[in-house]
Amino acid sequence: MIKSKAVAGVAALRPRPLSPYMTWRWHLTMLGSILHRATGFALYVGAILLAGWAAALAAGPTAYGQYMTLLGGVPGKIVLFGFTLAVFFHLGNGIRHLVWDSGLGFAPRTATATGAAVIGFAIVATLAVWGLAIVTGGFQ
Image 1: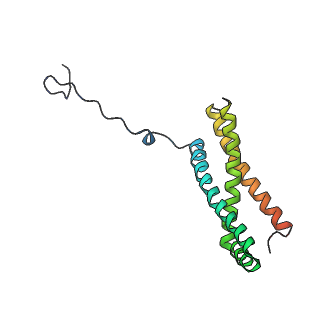
Image 2: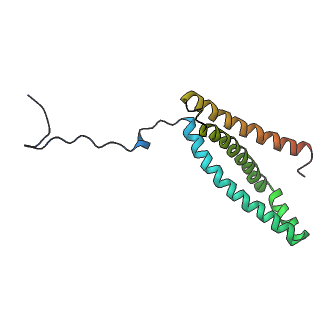
Image 3: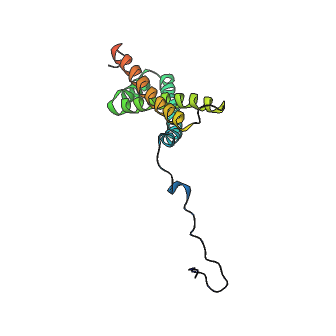
């Protein structure tokens, strides 16, 4: 005896497949992909900040002083720290993508290791740049 939910002459329908994102497990390479897109957007915001700095510089000492006061405050330094982190992450992950373009580094363990290396590089390089800036008097 065959148990089926089929109606006379109609085959039973299989369950509909789930969307792929509902079946994936989170891993470091997914995080790296999302962060690469996010840091790319952050670089656009940073470019606007850089253009604002150049415009303030061209506008004269008063405008430049006001802009530097804005960037020199705690919120400004947090934004600049995040921008520095975005630059280094995007740089490291861009190099990783160049290696991938040559056909290397796709093995799951290698991809996970290089993803961790890029995150580590971004954090260490950001802390080094900001530490150097603090030690040399780049902040008042």
